[in-house]
Each structure stands twice: as structure tokens, then as C-alpha cells.
Image (cartoon, rainbow, N blue to C red; front, side, top):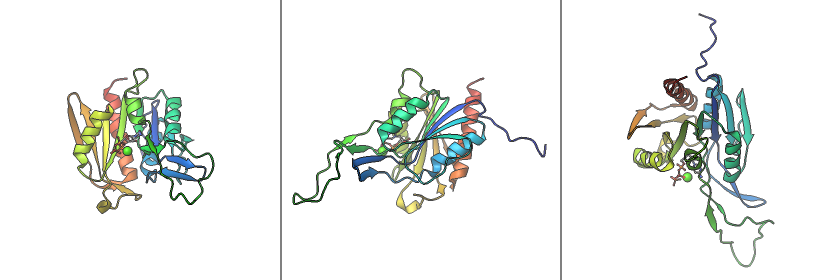
Length: 231
Ligand code: CTP
Ligand code: CA
């Protein structure tokens, strides 16, 4: 079996992944954004493709190339990301790794805002659509396995449990991003996987590992779960 082909446990499965930040325009030259390298989402897309899945990666602005075998759609804002996600459905598994900006400015300037005697302009913010919650609560065409991320700087597991309940997804990948961990923008992650199981929540805590290994481990769990689900 030295030259056996690699196992492809997600062969024939459609996997949708969001990644990166979103950019919310203030005017034609300025935007509000979240901090996100996109590395974890791209690593998951690459791992899912290696496992044989048909992968749609919907990405905010990042400095990364499309992984092999992945269909990449680039977007800017949260609203564009939601529209692209709807277009990429149906999916067997949807993974929301993007760091979506929670707010955008209520009325985007059509022209560049100039400095003036009036002082700095006040920015009126409005809330963006919650892509994960929207897809989790779809009455029609909800992917059978919906996975969210929770990047937290404190009370990691409590916040992640609350998010799992609030968003209506099946799993949450909880990720400690407090500045002390030094993980922001880096190549490693410490994650806990929270999986809804009936009325309770099962938690898998993984040791600190590279984002590529987190991706591989997550894809392996997905393969197990989709196998158990039949077919
Ligand atoms: N998410 C999303 N759309 C949004 C906000 C968040 O799809 N508008 C998704 C993220 O991709 C992630 C999950 O929801 O999978 C949790 O994001 P997070 O920012 O941690 O949660 P929020 O509900 O926005 O709560 P808060 O930022 O206040 O912690
Ligand atoms: Ca948020």
C-alpha cells in the first residue's frame, strides 16, 4: 500500500467556507474592518479539498492565493459575503470562519469625505447581517452541518456555549485570541470544538497546534460526523 491514493472521506460532499475579514466602506477611500489573516479558513478549505470535497471558499480581502481544487469567490463587505453564500448553496457542510465586521456605516459617502472646519465626521453605525445565524436558521436548504467560530479574548467556553445556542449552528470552534496568547495573525491556534449533541454539548479540547493541523483535525471530525449521518 506504499503508493495507495490518499483517503478521500469527503468525496462528493459540498463544503462552503467563509474566511478573512470584511471591509465596510465609509467612503470611496476608507473602510472599517476586522483583524483577520484568513489563514485558518483557507487552511480548512485546502484540507477539505484534499479530502475530496467540492469546496466553495468565500473570502473577504486577504493576501492569500486560492488553495488547489477550491472555487474562490472574493467579496468585500458582509452584505456581499451573505449574497455569495446564498449563491453557493446548497451545501452538505457550511463553515463560517470569516471575521465579519459587526457594523457598517449607516450611509456610505459617495465622495471622499474632506477634512474641514466642522472637525471629524461622526460615524453613524448600523448592524450587519449575521451570516452564520441567517444560514443556521434557514427553513429551506439549511446545510445539515453548520459550523461557526468564536474568537474570544475572555471567558472562552462560556461565551462559546452561549454563541452555539444563540446562533443555531451545530458546532462552534472556540478560539482564544487574547493578546497574551500571541495567536492573532500567527500560524498556530488553541481551539476547543463544541458540538451540540441533543440537549447537551460535547467538548473536544485540542492542544496548541498549527492552523494546518487544526484544519486537518476539523475535516477529520466532519468526515466522521457525516459518515455517522449515513450514506
Ligand atoms: N458571523 C457571521 N456574520 C456576522 C457576525 C459573525 O457569519 N455578521 C459568524 C462568524 O463568522 C463566526 C461566528 O459568527 O463564525 C461568531 O462570530 P463572533 O464575532 O465571534 O460573534 P458575534 O455574534 O458577532 O458576537 P461578538 O462579536 O459580540 O462576540
Ligand atoms: Ca462579531
